[in-house]
Length: 386
Image (cartoon, rainbow, N blue to C red; front, side, top):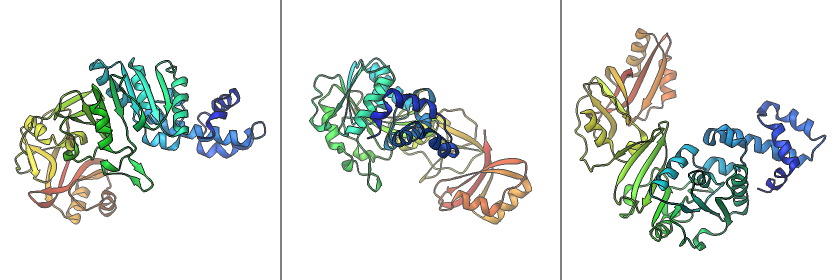
């Protein structure tokens, strides 16, 4: 980031303080005023950094984000602080005191590791990104624990570290990269680097095929607030173990190799498993806990006759079970005076917004409709959260 150095000067830091919290609608007026007393390039850089800090607050919290420095890609690709802190906690439980953080980006994971008391070598080959990571370590008072190095990660000697963490780039010029061997560096290289270390964690896309997980690895899928954030391949822990971890908490569900759940008719309650549970292929473990079954062999909705409490699935009470028919749904919603309608879909080609426009919900009541399949047939399940 060519405009980082001026922002680190006393004038730049004072300007950052002055533009903090500037709303988009105010930017032109603020820029016009500040350019009378500051270089135009510095004003533009400060306002751009203020925008990035506002975006980053959702991941890092406002207190940290207001002190840190960001690039557009850094905000987009960095790990959410809560997830990074959880992962750092797992490293400390393993007795890790030093980590080589390869492909460190703007330093989000290195910050979490350092705050857990771990010494970090943070490596990135991009000079601008490495400069931002170094600035962030200093801004948060962690420079004594984080050594940022600009280098090709494939050429870094990690022999003196307790663990390796690799977060390969999973985006290219055309967007997200789904083939693990197209990551930069490729997953195969990251696995080789992991196997050289006593402990290691490789961050991969949540959609990684289970067959691509090495036999030596433990695979963990992590969600935060119900949104799946990442998958991690752990080495030096429990090979072939599969787990789903839900944050905040954490709450962890371990796989037990259960067969696929039975398929049964829709009962009074429908359970929507957390995305991490689905990605980890642990729906059978939750279905057993709920004494339930699937509504369809291809759909990850669990049904049961009795209400249960579980952190791994959201329960709904089903009031109506109908074949898919927009006119019937519209009439039922009008009869129930439903004005607030939540539309969920799984295994249906119908888009929620498209359906909402057609049924035109009006009234004082709320309802949830599931567009899905049961026993192979398109259905509408209407209900409400328990």
